[in-house]
Length: 114
Image (cartoon, rainbow, N blue to C red; front, side, top):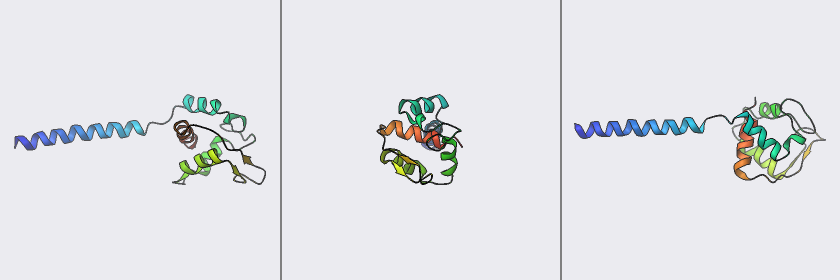
């Protein structure tokens, strides 16, 4: 019986740690962090949070991809490789050099702006 109690306690503690890690992983990207990345990689020269400039607003991007389970990867690929015509015949985005860790965080932040 004692062995069973020890296993139960270990399972509860281990499960609690897993939940804590999962909760931390689901924390939203702070606005200031996303905005800083937007500026660092000069995305703000074509995109603004709520206004279309040379490209769509960040809010419009987030809304367009809201129901797309592959949105993170799709948008990351567009940023790295560039895109043409996704937002109309006149829209084009040149390829960008953004380190993968920053790119992932930036796109996750943009997609959260719904």
